Structure formats: C-alpha cells, structure tokens
Image (cartoon, rainbow, N blue to C red):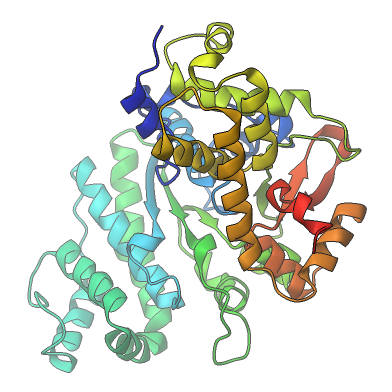
Length: 436
C-alpha cells in the first residue's frame, strides 16, 4: 500500500485538533491512558454522568499546551452525548483576548456560546436582564457597538464579545460598566438562560447541560492590578463565581497554577475541593531511565496511524519504510519529542515541508537540531543549572523559575502506574545541557 502524501500531510498538521466524534478523524486517535496514569476523561465523564447527573459540577483540567487536551475534551463531549447529555464545547480563545481576560468576559462568552448552540435543539433564549443591559450599553457606547437595538440575543452578545476582543479601549470601558453587575449577570445566566434551557432539554429527553470551556489554559501569566498573576486572579480570587453557573462545567486552567502557592485555594474555590485533572506526557522512558516500551510503541503508532489509517497496527508497522528510511529513525523522533504529541507531529510536519517520505536520518537530525536551537533561545541565565537539577532529581518546585520552565515546555511531567509523578527535561534540550 502506497502512502497518500496529501492525506498524511493534513493528518500531521500540529495546529489541527483531532475531532474524535468525526469517524474520519477517529481513525487517527490513539488511546494513551495506559501510560498516562489512568483514564482521566472517563473520570471526568463518570463524575457527571454517574455520580452527579442532576447536580451542577465544576471540574478542572490541565496539562502542557499541545499535549492533547483539546482532543481528549472533544472525546469527553462524544462520551457525554452518548450518555444523553447536551454538550456545549468551545475554544475560549475564539471569544477572548487571552492576554487580557476578566471574569465578566468569560461569563459573557459562556452565555453567548450556550445560547447560540441551543438553537441546534430549537431552543431560543431570551433575557430581560440582558436586554435592558444592551439598551443601556447602546446609549453609553453609541459609536462603538452596532446592532444593540436588535432583538436577536445571540447577534448582540456575539457582537459584544467580538468587538471587545479586538478593542482594548472598549474592553476596559465595558468592564468598568459590567464588573459591578457581576452578580446580576450570573443570576440572569442561571435563571433566564441555563434553567429554562435545561428544562427544555430534559423535555427533549436530554439528561442535562454540560459546558466545556477549552483553551483557558492559555491565559497570559502577566500580573494584574492587584499584583497577582492573571491566572491566580481569575481562577483563585474569582473562582467561586466561575463555579456558580448552574450546569456541569469543565474548565481548562494553566498548568502553572498547580505549582503556585494558591493551589489549595484553587482546589477549594473553583474545584469544589477536588484537585484538577492533569494530562501528562506520554513517557518514552521511565523514572529510572529505562525505556518505556509501551509509550514508545504508542507514539510510533501515532504517526503510522496517520500514514495508513485504514490498516491495523501490525500492517502499519510493516509499511514503516514508506515513512522513514528504517524503524530506528522513527523511534528517534518519538524519543526526542518527549511524548509531547504536538512536538512529535510538528517534527514530522517540518520533514514533510522539506521533502517527501521516506525521511532519511540526516533530515530527521537536521529538523531536531533546528527545533532544539529555537527552544534554547528562550533560556535565561541560570536555566541550564535548573534543568540539570530537574534531570537529576526528577522533581519541580513551586518557584516562579520552575513554573516558567514548565510554561516554556523545557520541562515535562509524566505519570505511569506505580511510578507516580515525576518530571524531566524536554529531550530536545537534554543533550544541550552539558554544553551550556
């Protein structure tokens, strides 16, 4: 069987999220739960569908950007829909300016997405509170906001979120007006949007409403006026308000919060006493340094499934030389990715941009070298010594320098079975440590 180059190119695009609910894309999905510390998505689903189907829940999900969270959340959406729930999934980065986010921005984005998605069920929302709010805003910002006199709730709400995202000045003006009205906004979303929607959904045979807010882990780590970081302000200081929406909620949050001094407050205020679920990397080696054969095999299969999606794993492996010159070359790519899925796909994508498969070893090494050089540019004085320490101890402390190394993907987290939780240096930087 010959490799379909165009299909392989699109399947390896690192910027594309795998939609498991789509039968075509489901062929590319690999289940890593056996080497990621457990069935995390099944735990999120069970909490909603089995333990608390009639009570609002708020669960937190985190991990490195690019490790596969969005793919897993879309799988969660599919599982919950199969269990009879109506699920609104959206990428918050589409509605919000991630460098500058406030609580009311998130609440309006949720209200907009829920209202717009419910139209698919022929459920149309109306809020007297928001209608009055829109009328007042039309008078306050007559030259900044269009369509404010429209009766279409979604049109107005969508326009507000879109224009405030694009205009820092308008965003700040709206916040000054909306912030004192946070309680009223929350109450209106619950009583005029979520409650009637849930009632109608149940009349249609649905078990309830679930809202999955993805990409909030991308919120910028900059300090805000209080001196706190933006993530701490949003998810800790305002966490109790974020969890007050009367439906099932799943929020992605920045990984750095797990290592901050506010982690316990985060767990109690936003997580309801439950720690966030962390999606770790796929291990290419164990804590002892020994090779993780299962992890390496699954990473290898990640690429081969994209090359030959209609074949079983054995048949795919037999065609490995259609992708690389020899099996060891693909294993080299998998090891150096550190089990970071987007990194692995990105390396293959770079190779595809250079030449057609099968890729020779010298091309793989060139691409790895280029990527390592890019990562090293972000390193600051003292970072190399911190990386040596992580490499030796397999631990990360809660200090800001370590948090920065996690955010920059210089350090990865792993969890495998009885080995528990440990950290290690991104393999693409590892061989540079001793040269620095």
